[in-house]
Image (cartoon, rainbow, N blue to C red; front, side, top):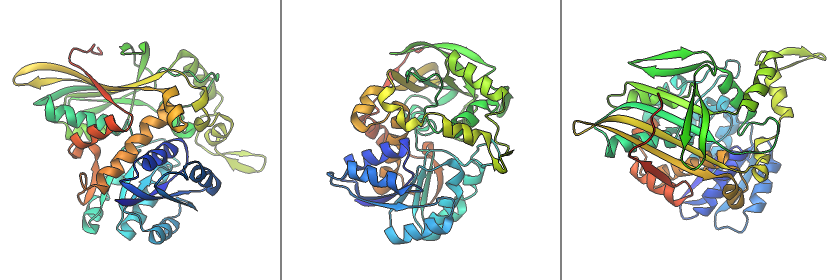
Length: 399
């Protein structure tokens, strides 16, 4: 069916690459490109017996010319960007220069500012339209599947959605005193930033981790949840008919928060460079180097994740509530692809988003978020590729 250039070779990329190879009818050929080519080569060796042809390459994704050169050499039908969010714009520029379709899982974030929003990537809309190529933004789980869930709820269950609570619970235990489940630098920047929620047409900012609730999750039980800012709220606030409030919640253990507080207190989460032994270093990047690599957590992690969307709204003049969610088992993910569930739940939708473009089901010139497309074919593929979804029509609501 087509060729995909996959940029990145971390935990999420590894899952997406495994899934592309499982889905060889769609992905005939892939090229894995990363700063560390040896990681790409090791993954190619592991997957060499499959039907998908695999190439590898060294790539500095901060360099647009390098990205252009590899696209011109490999000639992919789609670029799957699983590098760092700082590199989104250089890769999008390369896709424009070569007229190549684009998919990512996280929106752009400036390296020197702990801030992420869609304005930088939405600004590319006209240029992608003129180039006749498609960019699908945020095709992970959250953002990603949460947007598809919202489009599905809007299409099939509501005339108007009034409230949406996105709830991300990880009940996995990796045994370390402190570790992050995805890139430590991105994870800690996200968690230590101020929170926000959307209500009555505007975003309201909150102090970090200042709003807490307890929620009883199917299959994993009661967990502490904290309100965070998260990027999909920005697009969903525009794209959901009748929406009055959107909140994003994530689970954190008391142990995790205590460790994080100490690290903040001593300056280890700072992104401001400091002088150390005659050179400039960023404390958060140093902390990332000493923390466990999220890709190494797979064999250690036990338990499940539960990520989903709780909706309230109106259908046929009557009030309605609806909960759409996925439960994923860390050990089952590791057995299948050598990864824990946090990487799995992001890597699988990245593959599906690229599949939607290659099959023409999500293909129109411009820059779009996942909820701008028909959710039904994506929902079908979630069930097929390891992220089956479940429904409840009488869920517990969050006050």
